[in-house]
Image (cartoon, rainbow, N blue to C red; front, side):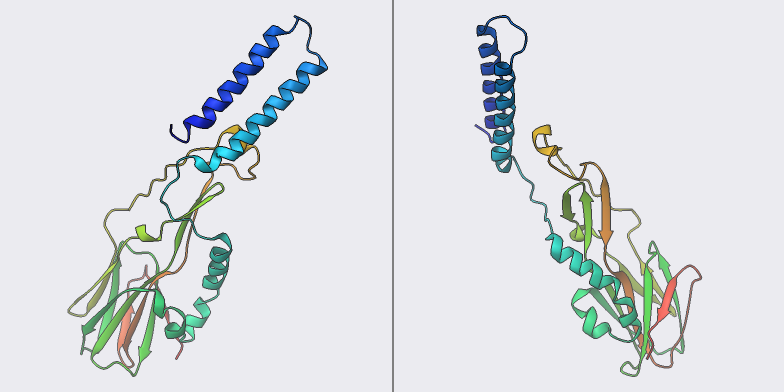
Amino acid sequence: MTPIVLPLLLMIIIIVGLVVFNNRTTKKPLTYQKSRWIFIGYILILIIGIAFAPLLPTTNAKQPNNSEFDDFYILSQSQYTELLDGGFTDIYQDNVDETWSFTYSRDSLFLDAVNFDGIVLIERTKDLQDKIEVNFIKDYAVMEVGAVMIDISEYQPDMTADLNTDVLLLQGPANEREVRLALTEPEFTISQFLDNKVGEGYSYSGSHFFYIRVPQELHVSYSDYLLVDFVKN
């Protein structure tokens, strides 16, 4: 017998028992005695529903810890200023999703992007000679539906970086990635105790940007629609 059938069967037995009990009593208007039994039956249904709720089928989706997610969200919002001050190595080194290195000896570079509307940070450094280093950063992405929070970080689109002569092209996938969540709304016996209404969806995402390191004297220009900042060093 599957987990979802057992609580339903017990509820049906209780309801049938109350109906049979009521029919065996005399045909009189609703009395205190009958009202009490109806109330007791309702309480029993609530208790059974709560007791067997953990046995219902569950999903394999990853659900982040609320406190850890809140701390991480607050921290990520305050790190942009530190990045501009040159704190990339200390802050986001562990969140580098992919790195590309290109040999480059020209004096100027033009930056362009396709299917990418995020931020691009550029660091000029003396550590690089005739070389360009491109890092793509992404950390977390969360979708929240009512009281359920699901980690969808693994479904974030992959980005690519290509160098063609003097043009560095940052490119995302041509098609959007659709993420569908299958969520069963709790029965009334459980949902009445929930503060949030299931069905109201929200999504959160952390850092999602390119961090490009170029030689100190390289002149960098870029498309007007790109959001570009230069690290202060």
